[in-house]
Amino acid sequence: MISAWRGSFAVGIVAGIAISAMAVAIAAPTHKPLRPVEVTLHRFDRAGGSERQFADWIAFLHARHREAVQTLARERTYFEAMFTAPDEPRRLYWITVQGVGGSPVERSTLDLDRRHMAFMKAVLVKGSHRQLVTQNVLAPDFIVKAVRNEQRQER
Image (cartoon, rainbow, N blue to C red):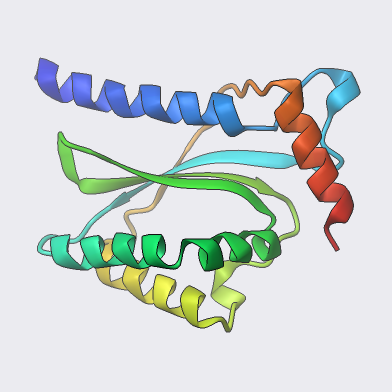
């Protein structure tokens, strides 16, 4: 029981570090983003027997990293990361830092996004998505300023 708790705790710590390092939702009043930014931790269950497909999905994202990063602007996503935990082999955690008004991936006609969605459908258990509740976000001024500058350039 304690080792399971430690693994979940470790995932929480990693997610907390990622949020603290990359989030932009709350900052000093003089350094607010131009538009609201949401920091969200998602949790999904992975289908049993999907280990190979999951490995292929991650390899696909690594192989097409630059192309995948370029799709983030359309979605107004400033940061995205996926996590797994050794003590939860059938679970996927996914953190996003996203501005409002982006185009959802489901509307994309890009090959990369279509394949990404196909992997999601094959690997993730339908109906298992949970959006964890953000309690606090800390972001240094340089992160807030970078997002604000990016928002000025968004169309």
